[in-house]
Length: 353
Image (tube, rainbow, N blue to C red; front, side, top):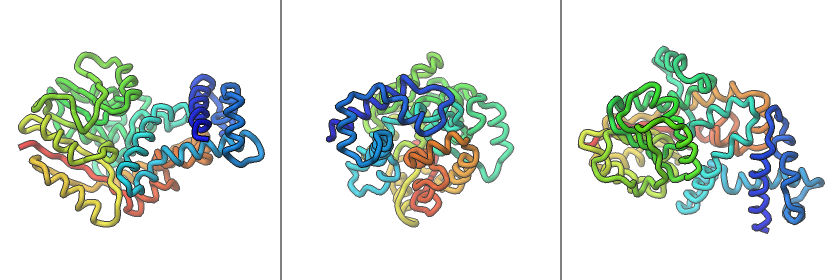
């Protein structure tokens, strides 16, 4: 049975990559029809055995949702009590993110959001600064600028010009392409990510000699001590098996006076979420310059994104709540958790003594 599931997953992604055509916006055309000719008859037989349904297309839909819900849905690994299971689930989810654009219609506004892997930030104050940023950012990001702005405002606090920067959990490198390179002048910018597919995308940007991208773990940074002026970490650390080990590595690679620019989500209940993270940050030899909860700003960004999605996007999200949860759209499980306080979002600036 499991072999059938995994072989179907392979055929599904391969078929989707080869056959997805612009303009196909119905669920059936995006998810089902493009892969019929790529599925082996034995796999079809196994699908029929595994799942109920009157037609093969119904079973395909059921299996697709099963694959996403069991391995990829982020709210599930937020709620897992076993730490090993939780981080294994997170790794599977983020390993599949490069493929998400193949699931989205060609006119989807979510494609620009999928360039960045964070939920974005919308300012309650200083709206003019946000508007100025939007007017200067690359046109492909202007529809949904919140994720890029999330990077911009955090980097700005580190005064990155002529500094050596390490971004841990760099994703697909769009922070360099759309924020660091056009808005700042870092002396060196190195991005590291555990996902080899992301690193290949990063290298495809061809940003120049100042920018370098490496595959590696946040828990064993492949750099000598005192190598960087700034360590940047955006919505990534919640995936790490040990946040404590990561903080030790940050402290090691930072130069004296260097800054750790951090923002991420945490889940739990009530004030314990904030107290736990604050305790972890204070346990290091890094001085906490600022520590703020920014959940409301993240919620405002997600609400605005939810209002901007197209009809084609809605068709996809209607049939697959997993993708809606990944984007934290209104009505999704992750949005409800964020709104209720089960997920909270923080930002911190730390400096090495």
